[in-house]
Image (cartoon, rainbow, N blue to C red; front, side, top):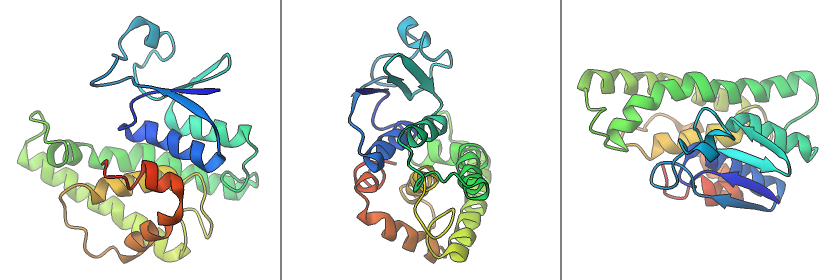
Length: 207
């Protein structure tokens, strides 16, 4: 059975958990990370030298890096409805997944830690303002894309890309910021409300 190492509150672990629901995959999960077993432990570093969650074990195969795990699981299950094989369609899914992991994540890091997590090390007003403004600019990109597709982030149908993007939008909605002026984004989140993985691992009250 697939093993997932990482605490369930981690946004990157939740990507994998949601994907498992979409693929109807059985799994077990072990708590690793802040508040649980330390990822700096030698046994964890032997699996991921970056000391980050999630890590999966699939038989004798070990893999880290959350979006790579999503792609691996979809490929393993031949889930072309989530991760299409046509070059252009797959590239569009990859584009949004990679953008979420780089540009979007970097934009909200400081503001999220300051405003949602209330981390005392992230309370500089100027940096909060800069991060909040960058986050809003990136959310405007999401809004524009969803206006164009009228459906999901990579097109008319739900794909693997909607998992990381949906989780990032949830994080934005759970942070005390202004959320007015994003009707396509809010409608998108309503559309995903019928998906069990979304309910259990995205809009579940966890930022």
